[in-house]
Image 1 (cartoon, rainbow, N blue to C red):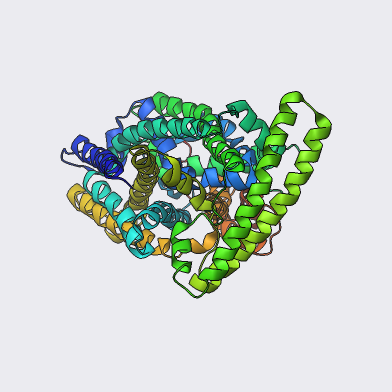
Image 2 (cartoon, helix red, strand yellow; image 1 turned 45 degrees about the horizontal axis):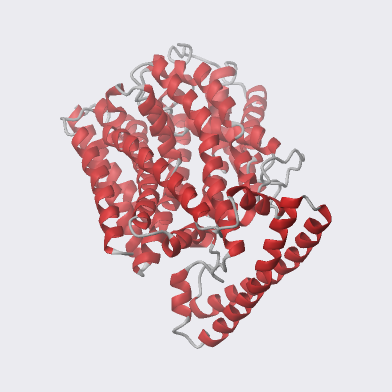
Length: 570
């Protein structure tokens, strides 16, 4: 990067971190450290919810996902607006009346301590692991730019967030989210505009979209009902609904965001606006990836997008073999470019016969490109070992190679800020759950507020170190945006099932839901291992199995209810 890029990057990150610490500099109580004093207006809630979701994975991996697989991933979010409606009607009023710090406090009043502890454990496990992935994503950036070992970049990426989250708590998280989302939005819009600007003079934005569409990348809607198809309307509406309902309604990283609202009305409005804005936001991010794909149809793309891995192979005995593959790749691209221009002209003239001929020729050339890339990946694997999936590097490589000085620094700041937003919220939620649901409830019940604030800081630090450790192993998981959602789908259905039993099945007791959730979670894990269905459906399966097994256990092994759960019926 240029000196100007480093200046833009450094000043942007420094401004956000210092602003967050400044706005949260007052003396902290448990309420202010974990819930920002429940003082935030709806727009803070909305932007904080969106920033928590919009990790570096979103801005780094989603364009690469669109580049390789098209825009069908947007269907993943189709269940989100409906989930926001259900949350506003059921979860927000329930949690608001109880005046709780975490979602899992409610479960002890409705069931018992062990059910609360089990649900908190499931949350801590999946959120700790997925936060490791969120740290790894920006580490790729630092590693690619600086050539540093990924271990050190993971420590830097996760460590900066530990600093202001430990010092400032939830208020620092909420205030930095507001700044982060503003910078992120500007950066991604500029990135999209710049991609279009770099297209050949005779190729317009519309031409680029048409070419990408004919090559299968603008595949927005798929009504085919197929349980093994990861992204279609039905998996998004049904599986996605259960995933989003569990994520926003039972994952403390999100519950902790809308609990900061100054009133139930502000929390509901924040959730509703999140439901309205998230799909257009994700659509635009994927569109940037499709435009990058279109750009590389007119310009030779790298044979492999991870430049660090390529540089390493050039200093090994495999350098000559890789160079030969690069030459072969360039020759194929030289043949391909005239075909792409021919397709563009055929689309303009609406010449269906010419369009079909160009698409057929391009399909054959794409097969050759994939074959050469496969050989290149094999060479890289022999030379360097490790992961050879470069989908997470596609957008980053475009930014570094083509954007002007200053813009590179801004776009990298965008990706790093996205990581900081989601990781900060995760640290805060992990600390909240650890202190409220375990330490304060089981370990030290009657300490004063200062002790719990200090313990919250230590818990934040501990989880930060844990997540950084997890990040060291994230390179083996392929596309980060898929990996993080697969990981969530392994746990969210079970957690949601526990809450739905608590809300709507008053005849089911604590023993039945405890064992039913354990059995249901085992079934979900086994279903994933044997590849029973696409991962989004695991959310529905897990939720349904908890309810079914808990109901059966209650009938076979009924539990006499000896106490009235006032909180649960509030």
